[in-house]
Length: 312
Image 1 (cartoon, one colour):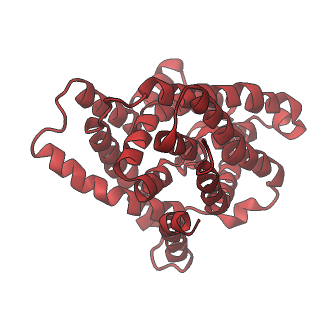
Image 2 (cartoon, rainbow, N blue to C red; image 1 turned 60 degrees about the vertical axis):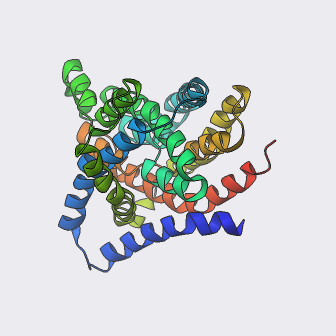
């Protein structure tokens, strides 16, 4: 347990530091806005490209890993999240609020995922995390954007072509495609560009976690207890159970199984807030969900990784 806490704690301390720097006005809003853009459009895509391009997939159960995540997300969304739209009085009457719950239930914070995988499981953990991200990032964006178009307050005004183009231009999706193409083609990271991307990638996790902390909005938690509680149960408990059960049934074991389950148990990504603002979601509720899930994950992730150790 102490080993797990020692590996996870520095990542959440970075998140706390980001919040303190913002709350104490050491670094104000404009700095964080620009840093978030730098991380989202440059640094984190560099991390995805480098890890996917150099991932050693020989002997790795690629289909089982991708299948567990893809099927798990789809089942949780279809069987548990979508029915809330019709069963919950608040969500039945408030489409934008429902899109926030949907995003919260399926969108993982990959900054936290890469940081924890590297700290606990090393290169193999990072490889499995990168592989999972190559499917989860495009799939989750597809589901979330579709929901915001259907139920968001302003997203419905956006045409199908413009929406597809927006998804295709997502820097994280493009990074996944480029990294996978470099790997499958055997080209790998080219000279000069490869080392440059690695330097950029090294800065991504620290700045990404600081930005997560700076984006926490504790005031948004007031009056959002019901939807927030639903998301915490779905994202931090049901999702890892569903993905873990599927991964185990597909034959995953050891470190690969552990990383797969941990990835499914990650808190909600901060970029859910950006998407909510852009496409007419309830951005205040989304901020509350991101804040609550990040706080709760500081407790739930050590518990999840500890329990994984008892799996056969």
